[in-house]
Amino acid sequence: MKKTCLSVAAGFLLLLLVVGCVLLFGRVESVDEHYLYNPEEIPEGADVVTLSVDCLALDGHLDEISASVRNELPEGLVYLSETRFLYTEGMTAFDLLLRAEKPARLRIAYQTVFGGAYYVSSINDLAEFSAGGESGWIVLVNGVFIDRSASAYVLSPGDVVEWRYTVSYGDVLPPELQ
Image 1 (cartoon, rainbow, N blue to C red):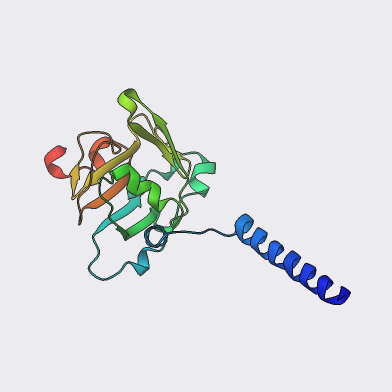
Image 2: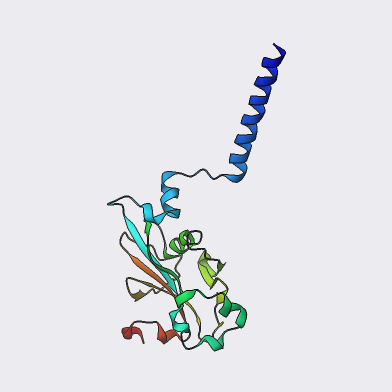
């Protein structure tokens, strides 16, 4: 009887240890959350949006940024090539960038500006003015420069969002905006 009680107690302690480890180190996620972080597994026919993040405009301007930032730049100056993400109702261009933060290993610094909108000040330490007085991050949706904060720009299924670093605002804008 004493051995049975010890076995039950040992089993119970082992179960508590396993559950504790799962709660401490594991992550429970819904199906939708899984697809947010695993865009390659999005179901056929699901509504999606596409995101890319680059600093291609820095080509030829690398000497204008600090060595510490230069050392953190991605190979080919692309942080995230065109990647599909599951679309959710009410999603903004800013929300989409935040969704890419974990899978693309982005470090996004942003601040609240007037009206509660968010302003992205840096991505992986590449910040506004890192490459001169006209440098910073801009956003295009379906090839068109957006006319408001990314946190106020609500996306539709199928939208293509591009976050681009610019050295001079005209260097990444479509010709009609230059």
